[in-house]
Length: 306
Image (cartoon, rainbow, N blue to C red; front, top):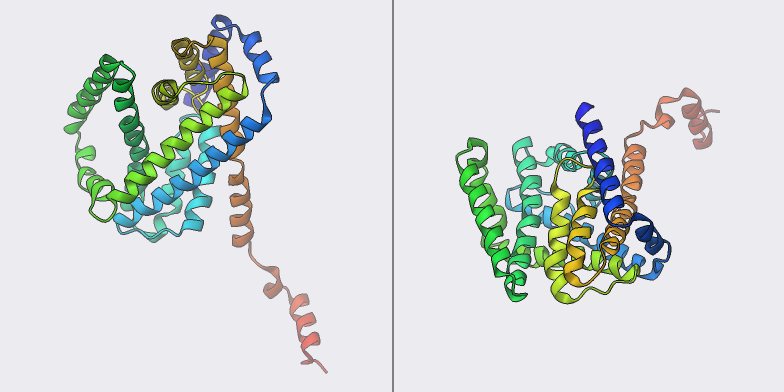
């Protein structure tokens, strides 16, 4: 509870800070004039990303010997997205997804499938970002990110729990029967994410060039991984305000585009409520068998009582 309050406080403090340094009223004015058609396009892209991510979960779990049906995967993924969008930390929904899916495998494999699937998303984003930085003439940025990533891998290599996941990670992402699907799904999911944010920027009047879409948006979305927030709010807006000027746009445009994207993410997770309702209805005990009155009526209708 205390951690949740701290994360909420951090997100609010960051948003207030960004509001003050990036002309908050101008950002609100941009949001008020946002083109709903581009926001709808962003919502379609985000929902496509959710379905494709659920598919990637199926592929990842299947490589580890866990069978998950596509319909179940999509519903569970929407629910986990809803939880991640509304609860501090950003991973509770995924943890719950692993617990709910454990009936088709042991808890270890279920947890590994979820962790590896999430890691695959970050790996795919890096695979797009690093070449794009080199292409855009920002090779030093790419070199710096590679150096940081390598240092993290070296530092984490000795952690026993992480060593234990190395073999299943390779099997689930680079095994001969899944590497093609993982590559295609990873690139498609990244494309949906980048398109969703770019559409939100277009909705508030900013057309980002392709170089900015491939370099700046991944960095903005990566800011959402900072755990001291709720669904990346605050960190994402701060990163957008700092990076949008590199594309010739105003900082408040970055804040407005980021806020619009956050709202689209939240709205696109609402189908998770339908999944909850469906599961609740399916698990609700039926009263038609247990009720003596209902049994009597059934017997009468069938002609058993004379």
